[in-house]
Image 1 (tube, helix red, strand yellow):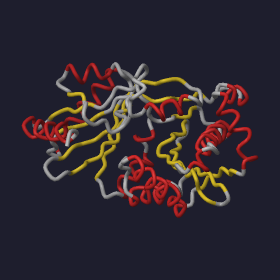
Image 2 (cartoon, helix red, strand yellow):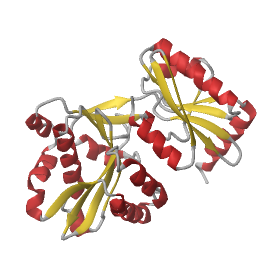
Image 3 (cartoon, helix red, strand yellow):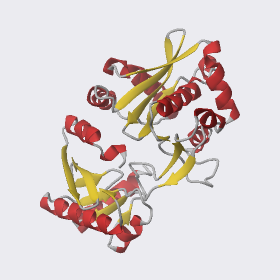
Image 4 (cartoon, helix red, strand yellow):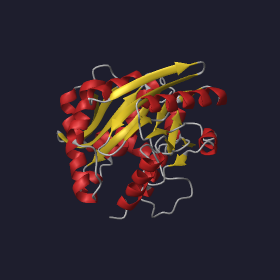
Amino acid sequence: MHFLQSTAWQSFQKQLGRKTFRQSGKGWEYLAILEVGTKNTRLYCPYGPYTENRRAFEEAIESLIALGHRHNVTFVRVEPTEPEYAEYIQAHGGHRVTYQSLNPEFSRVIDLQIPEDELIARMAQPVRNCYRNYQKKGVKVMSSTDPLKIDMLTQLLREVSARTGMRPHDDNYFWAQATSLFPTGAATLWYATYQDKPIAAALMYNDNTTRYYAHAAASSLPEYRKLNAGAALVAEAIVDAKRQGLSYFDLYGIAPDGSSPYHPWAGFTKFKRSFGGEDVTFGGSWDISLQPVEYWLYRIYQTVRRYF
């Protein structure tokens, strides 16, 4: 089960003031979040439902549709982790979300169930060199579950936003994550400093098997970029996850294999692949319309919005 289907994520959603539902049956379980907009309401099942087989998936979808009808939502959005289950949704009137996928359809996952020296050896040579030598340059990498330290990440994200136009979540969103997830260890802030100044930070989620590299930012100042603190931070988090007994490290979102070098995710896809691992494909985001007229008005609005 993906972290976004966990009870920890459910607690965070409740802290945001959202109504959540957890349903289960033979071979299936899901967390669904009721998201109320100004003109429509949806039931969102991020990276779910979790199912053990095709029949269980079908039953989970039926349960989600029934739940959606009970709460009079415009549509249900699901993100099956198994690509073949997307065929079932399409065959039963589902619509692939092409204008906005809330979670990446493609990711890079590292198997930690190998010896530590082999794990490091599978990293690209520049990453290995960085991992072994960053301390000699005066860089320090640390982790913390102190919610007050989340400001290190939000400040760097604001810098990235000003430079690139990227629109991250607002500070309150990250503060809510820190106060909800840090105390239980479900999330951790990793950060790198140079001369006591934070120059890279990343928010990572943790469950019983996997660590997820979720949100990250680094200083763009030339004197800090050359230190490669972001690479040192990720390498340390990967090795630490191995030592903590976790099985996987999910780098959380890359461009599809064979994408153009001009793809907007090309840069950080190359960065993530430099740590080793294998590409993983999920089922994508799919909408199941329960109120067709309202849903298509919503979809047209979202499509037009991309160009203005």
